Length: 224
Image (cartoon, rainbow, N blue to C red; front, side):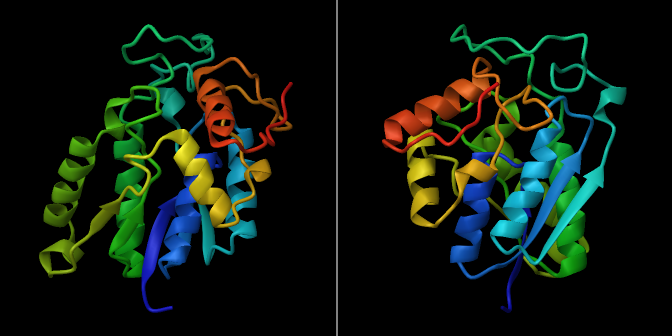
């Protein structure tokens, strides 16, 4: 393969689908995960399982300590993970600046690899209302990336690829199923236990359950 891409792989169903989609485009895929002190650490094992099962060229885990600033139910154990709610607003599971931090490191690795494409599984349809999942944020980040890097200055246009941005969760699952993604390997729950079993109550669990139901696909999720 002549073209490389960095894929942010969290261990959830969205990023597993994105990895499969990038491979279907003919990219040699370099999977990037982050150990940032998240409450749901089972996702790190899931990310490695997904990367290995789907044949990523490399799987790299970057250690970060976002618990040092906290501010999220996912990085501060004193903040409870809430059950799903439709009350609107940005939920306490939002991790301050997470995608900006993750994309910055992905951008650096892409430069080192000579990759012009970075794939991230953000979605603006069935999602939790995070501001760093919106199309205008992604466009602004891509513009910045091409101003801030040697690659961009030298004419290697860097692209932040978001193939799921306009898809419903059901559509994402259908795409992944068609590409052979094994969703039993993935973990989406914000408070999965050490064995990767989901709580079935948080916002991420709700969106996942609804997605499988709407897609007419059997849900392989293991619950506590």
